[in-house]
Length: 329
Image (cartoon, rainbow, N blue to C red; front, side, top):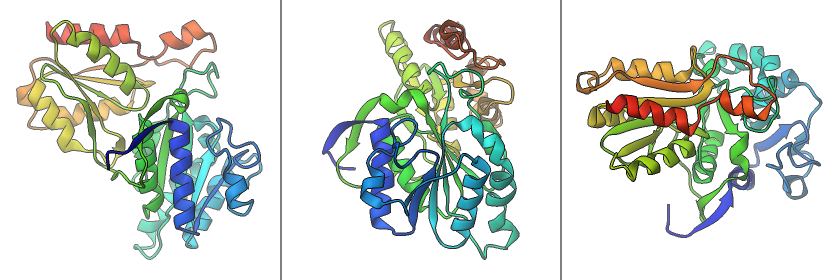
């Protein structure tokens, strides 16, 4: 990536990625509820209908099963659909199409077909949308062989990873944390892509490794800055893609610092952080650890509507800081 950068929002970065790929490849199209005239529930596809028309920016019926099923069929026929689920919670209605069809067809047909589709999910809490519209479900999809899972934390990553996801010949679950849509960051002016399966060290350090993804990354970076004023060097590693997972970068950081804290918004029980912890515990980094691997995660509760309770249900800077202090003892 070159030096020419401008500040744009996470939402605009996703819009740019989709638009550039649709200009580059006539087989790419966008479909979902209110993605056209309305410009998307969170404004992500604003202006795309005017440029590409209703045949390539398709407002669908309110049926997630139909959206996912149509995307699978279109991908099998050589198209590259981008299907948007207005809220990640709604994938429950389309799990057969995603888990039993999209994820398995390339394997079951011996590689004679591919399913190059991207399923964009607006996930996570922080908007007061309550229990049925605020979940972080990425671990579900990581459990299914055949699916790739991407969770970008910055506008730059969101654009570069989405470009790679659209060009990939496999189904990709692309999780967009809703609170991040309005966040701004530097994004190159020229076209670029970021390969799937490559983590990014957002901040280098030597005393503690924080592993975080999605909106927990900026939270962890703020905590790391606070600890720097106290003479504690905190490294923040963002996997960016959970499947494929960059095991080398994660284990190398754990080996270097000897202390690992994993932070994610999803519920603690069976969350993806447990997989990362098991990975590090089973690697050469284990013998270098100076303290047990710790996790700070969302509570095992439905996300409350109450703003105060909603904030308490997911990791806070205070909880992350306290865990770091425990690791340093």
